[in-house]
Image (cartoon, rainbow, N blue to C red; front, side, top):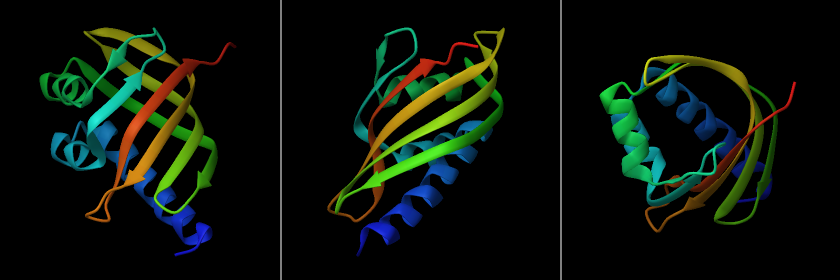
Length: 127
């Protein structure tokens, strides 16, 4: 598989992730996130897969809008890095939030040939 094919696969998988986050689809998120996920949020907290799933499952996180733009994908054989601008609105623990972020995600293809997020980072984009 060449890098162009991988890039298309990753773009499609990113869209699956976006929809799963919007719907708080814990089952889909469970499939898309690697067990060893390490995600650093915009506040510097390092979270794992169970933290993310629990936040969606409990309703702690509710995403109303998640618009991606300026998506850049760097792909290799079994690893891809995505950097994307995200306009996000929703709530966290009942407090409304809206803003622009830059997300970086590292996708890896496991022995089962499924792409999963193994690492990520987000930062707030200053207005």
